[in-house]
Image (tube, rainbow, N blue to C red; front, top):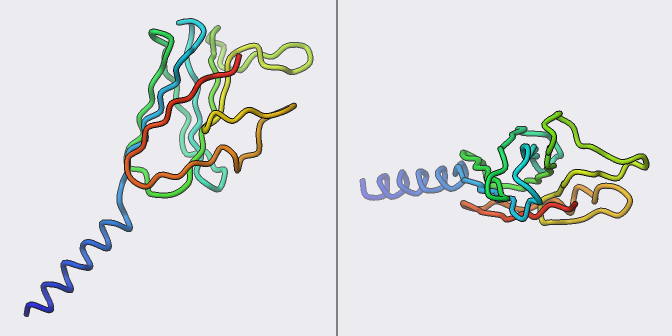
Length: 134
């Protein structure tokens, strides 16, 4: 009987670990003004968009919280939609004129950085702080 109880408890512990649901908090700080929204996309490790969210800028920052995430690799990209038109503004040569960024605060050269550089791992609850490029 004791073996059966021990075996059952070990299965419960393993299943809870395998299917744990974690929380991701993202703070975007050092935003240049309090106009508009931050538009954010959360990706899984296979470059599939899981969700798109927006948050009004307040006190030069913005925060997002995602719950019930499985352990694994994720990535984020975002931009500061200052004029609330739903798209990232660019100049004549295609350079963004509104703030933007990626997870790990990676910066691309002549375009976005490779997706692999955006990836970060969630093992338990996690908080990341990002700063846009203007």
